[in-house]
Length: 202
Ligand code: MD5
Ligand code: FE
Image 1 (spheres, rainbow, N blue to C red):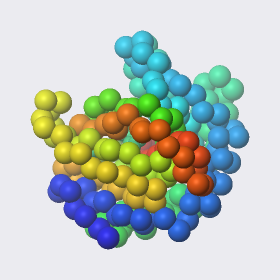
Image 2 (cartoon, protein in one colour; image 1 turned 120 degrees about the horizontal axis):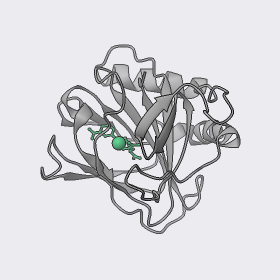
Image 3 (cartoon, helix red, strand yellow; image 1 turned 180 degrees about the horizontal axis):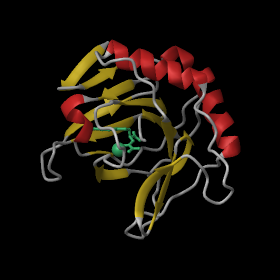
């Protein structure tokens, strides 16, 4: 079922529940080329979440966060976004009421038990008019969904394997985070939660 949790924010429960194996195969294809890595924040902290990406890639260093077409070390483009993810992003965005969506960037987050993502805003994309489509696989999570101010009270939204959330309109710039993941094992994904976000970044 579908749940609107704020203007522009739609949770599509179980939207990709039947496509786990294909989605995981797409993730593993990217991981083979861009192995999971723990990034250091501009503040010098190593993140508990491991990341990989395709399309326009993500990087974080002492100068801040940036998207780029190429791996600055090898000079090569990051791998392309798998077709199944392009199709899913467009389908979910349109069903949530947004215009056809052609993402150019795909960030993948792997959470092991105990990993968390602190409250933050996504504001490094150049285009805030496009939504972000987020896909949850594997272990469940509790999503914190706040307001435009860090201090705004956050709702707690459970996210399960196969859930898709479309974040657009006024919700696009809300503070959000992921509570520490509980110990567990998912039959397809193992002892992890994987989140895939599709974005128009550049
Ligand atoms: C996750 N990832 O579950 C989340 C899903 C990230 C990140 O937060 O930055 O990689 S995306 C959730 C999201 C995106 C854009 C806006 C809002 C939430 N929001 O307004 O709440 O790994
Ligand atoms: Fe985020």
